[in-house]
Length: 385
Image (cartoon, rainbow, N blue to C red; front, side, top):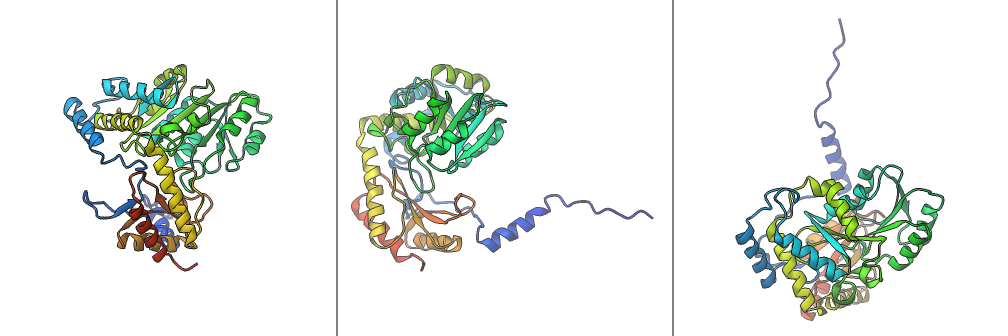
């Protein structure tokens, strides 16, 4: 008699993985927030405080009434509106690039740039601290990928040395975990030694860095260069949703024809495009918002470290405070929330160095009383080292 072979259970490994996460204190849960949440929000990426600005919400609502709730299709079919074209023109002009292409998210923008601008035989050199969307773009590109030590131009040079084909170096401008900035000018100099291209993810720089918030590539004198491409999100400083790739016109034309996350994805909803465009125009009119966001970040850092906590020096609007463990970080964030303060909680695998943190957003619309209250809450609820 033949021995019966036990068939594998569909998704059978998931229970074991769930148990492992539970033991490690790494279970993630969704917490739907109310529209009228009483929390002081230092957990979002609303760096300029524009998500609820009356001009931004009115523009989003107007776009819904004019164009409908959805884009209705991919942008190559019915999903492009006049709003999308206006937003692209003004984004490119504001940041100093020749052209722009709007996509449904910043994640999609990074996938588009890395997969369409490389090919088998290409080399991608990626900073060790880069965002998950860049990591996934490298994986999907079919190019060879070399990981360079964090913010180290010499490590980039070592990765490029000896490669004879096309090469692209990709880095965040501001890293989302600790809020530190990449040495863009020095990295660009290395890139140019080898005739490579530079892709900069400016998700956390647009609206915060550069003159009037024009972004990190603009501040470094790289915007508009023929060998530089930038990606941005519309969901952080511009308070809306979506992403964009900025670069030379011929590069943008190539993405329209070759980037799968653009070609096969439904276009960005008109409301998001309208809201982002209104926020961009507001930033142009009120450029001091960028400097205020940086000022708030410096104030948070100064007060937190003055109280004895360990926090990374912020180069933009992200303030990262170290926790003794993943479990302690989770409890700390929960205690802050119970005290009326919303903060981010970064734990493995979101942090590549394995060190858990609270992540605070410095918002341009916070006043000194709110800053002092937030710091007091974080300090009062801090776990023992």
